[in-house]
Image (cartoon, rainbow, N blue to C red):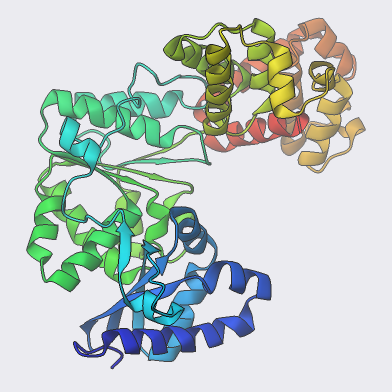
Length: 468
């Protein structure tokens, strides 16, 4: 056994030294030294004779997130090899307060200041507003475009029919596409509707609360917190993968909430089918409701986001500055908003209009950067052909092979929709076709993109590739 009431810290240190010995062989020196070595085991709790719950401490939230994302599986495997038991690893953030009279080893088992570890007490924002929902994340501030229209409609349906329509609602997509914003916007409306207590958490917080409940023998308090609610909103559920005890508890929580018709909303950076280490029984429940992909924001949507933020922060912005920023961040709306907020704050402080030149200087772009990001039609044809594994002349030819027709229609759509060419110009570029052929192809693509998630992703990926 690795723990006891009397010498838990000693056993934890011994376990971590042994695990580090395993990891030092399998990881590069840079990865091991930068990410694994700064961690330490804060506690080890024996759940039963075959399972351990291990709290692995990191010095910062960023460090913890990186370890969770890149090294979780290999650390878990090493712990299970050393202990010969199943291990659930919960990452926590602990900032050490070093005493000059103690050495580094003693400081780790001595006094530490914990962050984000008030597990059963509400966060500061919760005490002020009654919920931990971000006040900015509302439907009013949520920009709707072709990439998120279906997800927005699903969120509205949940508000109208909580617990019965689209339960659970599973939102997935890449970083910065607005998953959390939409989920919390629904949460705000559910609060107004009076569905009961609305709890919004990250998957990491759920795991940390579970760890705390085991250590303090307060499992009843844990169950009350998560099962006596009207709606449960969970961010980043992909991090449940590989955490057996967390999945076990969430499985029972999920079942009890759905049986009571309490609404569940989850976000993830991937589909349930693609979450590594997710139990089949939990995956099937995630798939049992409404699963919606949120794609990358298109140019028009990025422009709308910027203009909305400008109104919120009351800053004057030149149209050319809006256009440059919208073109400079094709993949991440969060990064776009963050950069704009910094620029807007500077402009407001100086009492000036935010100009294209200010954006260029901040982003390190050359003066002719707008001209540089304009795309020539031949680049569209070449990029689409390469993406679908065809030659340019195949796209411009007469073959009616199904895959080739799809690629040809995608090229026509991008030439028309993104480059804003007229039908005759597109027809001429695509092998001298009739303009009505292009018109029908574009109309067909517009309909399919609206309803076909896979095709929409391909078009957005191609559009992104054109500007990088």
